[in-house]
Amino acid sequence: MVELSDIEIRCVSLDTSLRSREVIDKEISDVEAITSKHLSEPYSIYVYRFFINNWPDLCLLALNEGKVVGNIICKVEPHRNVRVRGYIGMLSVEDEFRGLGIAKKLIEESILLMINKYHCDEITLETEVMNKKALKLYENFGFIRIKRLFRYYMNRHDAYRLVLPITEKSSICSSQLPELENPVETVY
Ligand SMILES: CC(C)(COP(=O)(O)OP(=O)(O)OC[C@H]1O[C@@H](n2cnc3c(N)ncnc32)[C@H](O)[C@@H]1OP(=O)(O)O)[C@@H](O)C(=O)NCCC(=O)NCCS
Image (tube, rainbow, N blue to C red):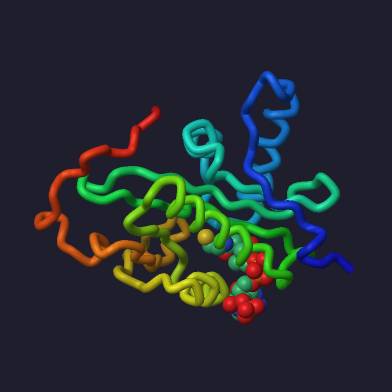
């Protein structure tokens, strides 16, 4: 029986001085495979590459005996040039590894990175209104529902936008905030 302690969490590594191009490409296609299997929304390979190439440290893998069994993909960007906003784009865990706390661990590590490394003022995400499991998971971290997005997904389901406020800036109207002094560098 697998336990959370058997799961290694690490980010993807794109460093070609440490790993071959083939190994890196295989890891990216593993991420694409697990995500497309479990999320209803289809994403092109360009979307995965966009996230992974720009924020490889925010693409975390959960591995069991070297095999990818879970994954979270995030990014950080300035929002209206007044706030630093983290975003959780995709999260999935293989069926047979669910209920062990893997998603919780992936979210926790991503949040810590977005706060400590990127100094995010808030973290946002969208999830299907019907996805009770995901809503409970995120709300237990303190995420709150701020908007219902009508027919947001291609399957015509609505989404909730959730936000986790980190700093005071998150609760102040953008028009009342000064511009960022050191905007997060946009790499693409
Ligand atoms: C949602 C998902 C990522 C959860 O992964 P997981 O590793 O099983 O989740 P965890 O074991 O870390 O559980 C964390 C919390 O999720 C919630 N949860 C997990 N399974 C649940 C279930 N069957 N029913 C209700 N809540 C559930 C609980 O709040 C749980 O915390 P608790 O154990 O303290 O009660 C996984 O089910 C999945 O991949 N689903 C398909 C893709 C998806 O919906 N992604 C999220 C939308 S972006």
